Image (tube, rainbow, N blue to C red):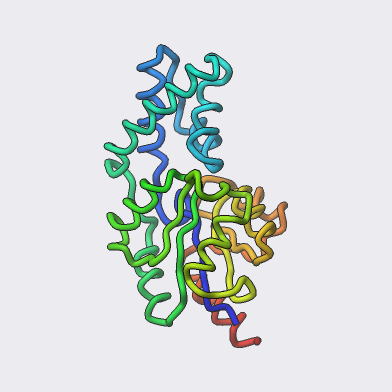
Length: 220
């Protein structure tokens, strides 16, 4: 039986791309570099903000200069992460329905931890009892550590869980954790990318997740 659903955040629960792009471009401008398009930033996200800035800088800086640019991004994003960000259509209803059906739910993201927790409060009223982001305490995805940490906090085992995400990193994270991955088609990557990586299921809308879970549990 599946009792637990662990979600990626950016591109899965929340559309965050415009706010990320604006903070990336603020940092680039402050450090004298050309801005990036929305399409470019879409390709850069998914592996944490360090790699996001590394890709945006594209070798223009030394390691120390890149670290300074990253800090500029973090400070700007922390103050501006709620300007254009919003839940995808149907996501708030999905979260409420999962809780009504007594599913355990969690967020596991490569976004820095304080932002993950703030966005959980801002957009979901803290409905996710566990929200884990990047920190010095746990290895980032695709390492399975953050998934294991979430399972531990929820008090469940991995054989009861699925992971829901929109990117290659999410598919690899689920595989490394030994749990099925459900890919979403509304996120930052094309569905074909996830399908070629061997996701367990693909869904085109949040409500389809409930159907997939119900069919799986009825078959058990």
